[in-house]
Image (cartoon, rainbow, N blue to C red; front, top):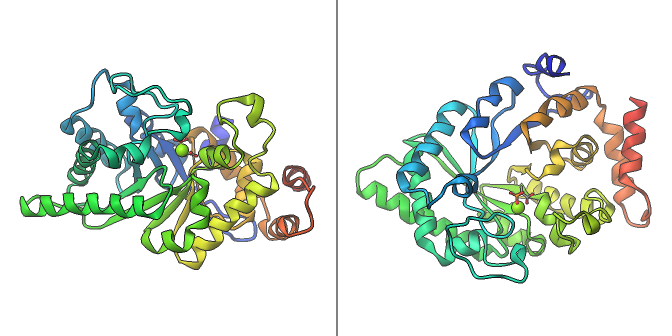
Length: 325
Ligand code: PEP
Ligand code: MG
């Protein structure tokens, strides 16, 4: 299988009916970056910067952060890397950062909430990213945004750091894109406020589905009841995709959904064209794309999602299409 997938790596990811997809890696350590050459992926759609913090024994210093980001960019070369700001807290434990015991850590003091509340940490990371870019373009993604003001506040922090570097005569990125993760359901009702502010959007289905269904993503006893591409979840995702199109904001899916064949097909059928996934999933998903005729599947899924057709299983419907191909 490996050799088989390797043979696909230089082929463009285009469906039989000519729809082009962009496949990207989820990553977080430089060790997996050279895999870009093996998979032929277009870049890194999600670089989980918290991993460096989780495997360290103490808070990584500015210099260590710069080195990691610069190395990641150097290995990626011309391929873009989307650096997600620290998403610590919840299930991502950083032992040396003292935290209060929380009843519901996934919904607690974590991620950008912590970043905005302890701006020293956020400022240092932003500075490290700006310096690591060394005059090249830079993409930064903000996790766990719950309301638009948090995204705006983060942008202010970034611009303050840019001004600081400029005044100090240091290089600033030739272009900065600031993106927002949609993974907290309240943003579904804020898209008209949020999207005009964002340079790009990335859907985090792991958390979005967890919060939409009020079921812990790590607890199979509850999570198994709620298919991530069940009608209400897929409708929610489609709402974001449609809004992003309306506002002309590029959108990617970076949750684990994108790396599973049936789920990837469901996402493609609602108009998602950028999928970010674990490197091992690139081959199988590319093979699926090359073999599929998406037009008729889009129609079937649209019909299933429309009002009045509750009870239809997208999973069963898509499996039938795959079996037919
Ligand atoms: C997500 O929530 O889908 C996501 C990509 O972020 P993480 O899995 O790192 O929480
Ligand atoms: Mg998440």
